[in-house]
Each structure stands twice: as structure tokens, then as C-alpha cells.
Length: 349
Image 1 (cartoon, rainbow, N blue to C red):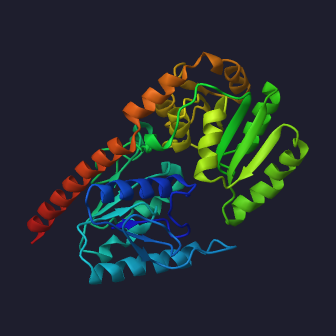
Image 2: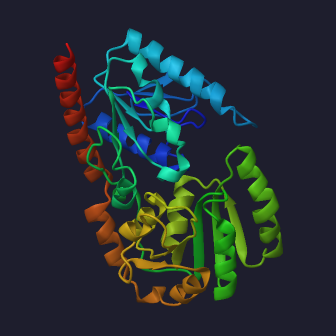
Image 3: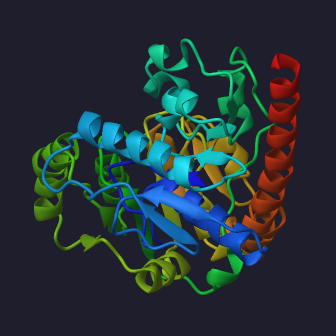
């Protein structure tokens, strides 16, 4: 069974990285013949069985209420169904793992600073962890039962490469303060280029306030140079990534991965990113794009993206960040977690 973030539905249209990875891993496991189930919001669309834990909230965050509903539903499902293990992508369910006899593998999608330290206190004996990048793993070395990392990956075949690019930049992702799309607008303005801003404003209060107070005024002031594409379909997303001269990644947090940078690479599009967290592991500086330390440096790098060869961008994603490689890694991890938990239970008996 897979456990999702309790506030957001899971589907191939998901914008959040954890939801995209859960959808992709569960799909790969289902295609490989594994019987899968996903505990998630009612409107989720998955490959195996959907175990609804309630409705996604509209208009307010309600995290504590939804988390309680979500964990109680998983415990109820586990009493009536037999699972080999739970793969937790929720960011918090592992704290309730003592309700289960099955092992729980919790994939940590966020930087350490975004988790409350209390989340790692008094950990249930059946919880195992894994990270998704080298830079992230360094900050979690103190956790018990830490498994080998598995890098995120994408289904490369769903993206088409193009060597022909428009004279336009692209920013794509969740529209929120930590992703800082306002910086992409500023960088494009300084570089004298048009920008497409594509993404989703989640129905969370601080996301909506950020959009209304910081992003919308910039969009209205830059109508001739910035196009806003709200909640693009997968088809729109692919077209935007193929056509862009470069993808800008302006995250202000220590990113643990970057799916959108992988997707850009699969389309043969270079990435110019602020060098935070694992972005230097995804973007090969000077070969598939540039990692920079400031908006000033980003503007300079934008002028050099014509030197990046699209085929090299595609090749790096195919060889290092495919969903198949990710699924292979998780299959190995599942076997190891199940075996180690079985041995632990035998020793405790």
C-alpha cells in the first residue's frame, strides 16, 4: 500500500513532487505485476486500488483533521486487507506506524528544515526511511533504519525532445513563496526575454496570499512580456517544455530533487537554476544547463543557454533519471525492508 499526502489528490496531473513520484512508482509497480493500493483523497486516479481516506479540503488547510482521518483510515484498511508493507509519501504518516504490524518505508521528500524535529522522536520500530538525493541524505544520517537513497525519476518516453526552441523562457511548478516565481519574472525582465509562468496555486492560505500579494501584481505589470498558464494539462506542459529556450528554477529552499528540471532535460531544454540543495545533482553545470548563485548570475547564464546541446540534456535524463531506474531502486528497497523487518520481528519474539 502507498500512503499519500492527506490534503492533495494523486493523479498524472499532480503538481507536487511527492504526488508525482507516488503516482509514477505505483504505476511502475502495477505494470510489473505487483498488486497495489493507494490510500489517498477520494478524487485520486491511480493504477491499482484506491483506498479513499476522505475528501480533499477546499478553501482551508485543515491539516490536523485530514491527517487524523487519513491515519485512521489506513489502520482500518490494514485490519481488513493484507499488505506486505506501506510506502509512505505523505510526509507524516510514519508517526502513526505503530498502529500497523507491517513495515513502513517513509520516503523523505523535503529538506530537513521543513520537518518538525518532533517528527523523528520516539519512532515506531517498524519505520524505515530513505532519501532521494545525496545532499538531502547528508542531513538525515542520524536517523535509525535509514535505507539507501533512490533518486527520483520520470517516464522519459512521455516527453518528446525538440532541438528547435522559441525565444521564450519558462518557469513551471507550484506557485508558492519557496519556489519564488517572482524571481523568474525579474530574471526574464533583466534578460529582455519573454516568460511563460505555468503552474498551480494550491488552495492553501499562504499560497493564495503569496499569489495575490506578490505574483499577481507582477503579472499585471508585465502583461506584454509574461504569459500566465494556470494549471496546464500534461499536453500543454510537454509543449511548453519542448519550446522553451530554457527553464528557470528559482527555488529558495534546499531542493531535494527537481522533477521539472528532469522533464525539461527530457525535452532537450537546458535549465538555469539557483544552486540550492540537490539541483546541482540534477543539472550538470555547463552541459545540461547552469547552476548559479544569484539572479544577476542567472541573467548572465540565460545568455549562454544556446551553447547547451539538447541531445546531451535528453541523454542525461535517460541514463540517470528514468522512472524505470527509480522503480528498480524501490523494488530492491522493498525486498530489503520486508526482510529486515521480518528478522527484527523474529529476534523480538
